[in-house]
Amino acid sequence: MQSYNLNETHIVTPDEEIALSTHQLQVFYGSNHSMTDASLSFPRFQITALIGASGSGKSTYLRSLNRMNDRIATVKGEIMYRHTDINSRKVNVFEVRKHIGMVFQKPNPFAKSIYDNITFALKAAGLTNKKVLDDRVESSLKEAALWDEVKDDLHKSALSLSGGQQQRLCIARAIAMQPDILLLDEPASALDPISTAKLEMTLKNLTEKYTIIIVTHNMQQASRISTYTAFFHLGHVIEYDKTETIFQTPQIQATRDYVTGHFG
Ligand SMILES: Nc1ncnc2c1ncn2[C@@H]1O[C@H](COP(=O)(O)OP(=O)(O)OP(=O)(O)O)[C@@H](O)[C@H]1O
Image 1: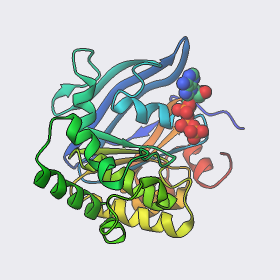
Image 2: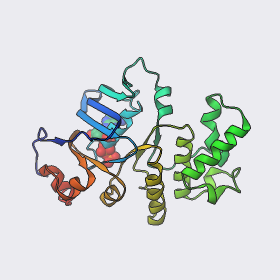
Image 3: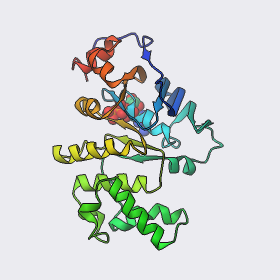
Image 4: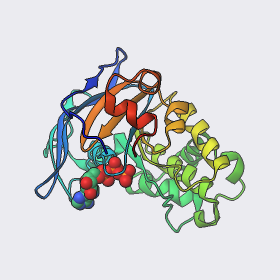
């Protein structure tokens, strides 16, 4: 692979209201410096895609945003959310995750009913009123575009659902907590094209209420659903701009080579 000047970057700050931003975020796995000075601002109610070759640091960066790396890595720098640096050790991680939810690559519903999957965290947070729980189950499943398919089977095991349905259930489970921001790490990589299309449509509709940051290897997917795209390379954020700029007129050679399929 051609080597690039990793100091040559092009990072815009969107004009829109910013939901979350990082300032010089660095991540170390032991002595391995895996993410260098990542400074990005994510606009509210938009989808931002994180793209880059395998090992470029996309998941490392994403997982740092709601402190999922706390136990496995050292994360330095600021993560600003509502005027607070949520990377500070003084900030409670469980609070952070109420506001910033996460959906993983492989659907991972609990071995419980559909209803219990959605109410599990709500009950743990102290919500006991059945009417409120019922309403939250219905609204979350509707937002995740799963309600019509499961409304008569809410007490059926979540594991009996198809992969695509399970992934939408995981989204419903995340939004039941009424977060502001959803982080998704390659959520469609285990899904067939029809389930992927349904998931993409669901994500686009979710931008009415949520800010979405998604890691994807699928560049068509990034261009179909995101407004902004960040290109990662060897632990650096090389370029961040409107998605159409990244794919049509990227400013940096490494981005140009990646989006035209020269490596990755
Ligand atoms: N738990 C870990 N412990 C040690 N090193 C890790 C760990 N997770 C990731 N790394 C290293 O950090 C670097 C970035 O990996 P990361 O998984 O963030 O990349 P990625 O762009 O998401 O890759 P992929 O697209 O394959 O998921 C790699 O060098 C990887 O080996």
